[in-house]
Picture 1: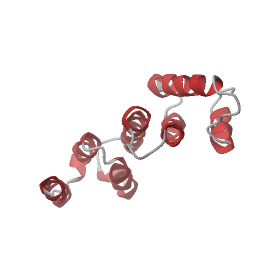
Picture 2: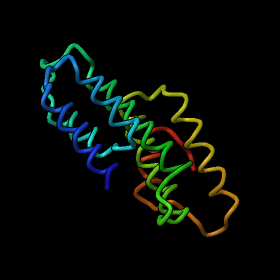
Picture 3: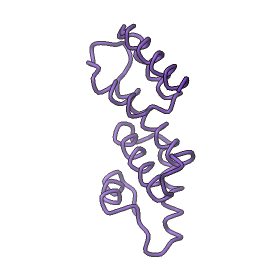
Picture 4: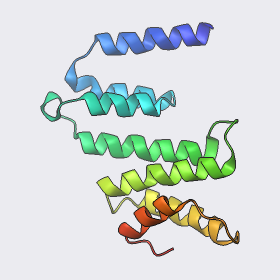
Length: 138
């Protein structure tokens, strides 16, 4: 309960100091707290001219960290397949923003390498189509 209260206080303190140039700092704080959806919402609500920061670069950072979180530390109540599928979705978003992001590419290759060892297993046709559109041939 104390942790929840502290999180709310920190969040509202960050939001009340709503200076646009603090957006990267707010995003970093939300990433540190594993609040990726909240960070993405914050970025979606930001106007491109509101900050000196590049919104696409911040989105890329959030999606990459979200993917890593899901892949390696995702929720305990979430199964492995759901975590890997979620991670792939995040890496796809990273690669839509920056097709040269080497970390996202290597994580996609690692996850798909694992899938290739399991007959009749796939992350889903929608993900496979997205990967093909990005130049992956699985």
